[in-house]
Image (cartoon, rainbow, N blue to C red; front, side, top):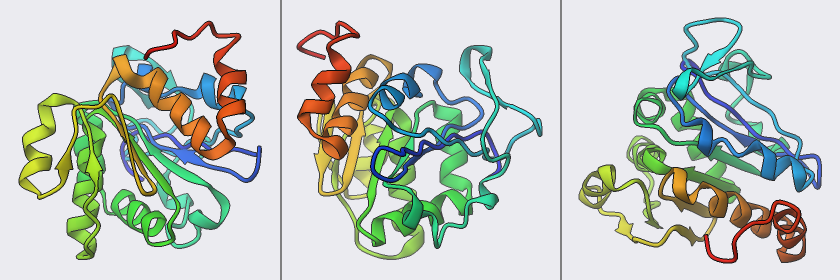
Length: 208
């Protein structure tokens, strides 16, 4: 794409991906949980200002597997990945919402009935993708409180729950809910046994 985004793929069954943009929150890029569950993690850049790395929040840098999202064709990506995950961060979310490649990718995954997940302000990208595609796809979601009104104004159902699953859409609220968000994704795609297998050694609290 054209900012700084990251994808996750998994080889446990197939693959999946995940996106992170210039100011995406590193705390919400939970590679550790996914790789521990057997996922093959892949990343792709969105609007990268530097051709080598993506500059995330707190001055953390990552080197994407794909330097540009254009390298990941939106019309076929859903054949190779099980889920598309959009991390949070207000600047990054704005990039997602204004990037055609990101919006096309979201629409492609949703049309094919594949999993799409977003945390924090990135939930607004789901809203933007629905507006762009012109197809009715409103869901019950959650997000960072700062973008709640924007989501409600668009006609989506809003929840204060820490992690929300509606159909094939998974959303969460922010850095404090990122762990539960990641484990829910592991559970949905790999089962509760795998979730518990990952959570145990990490000494995860029963309530997240």
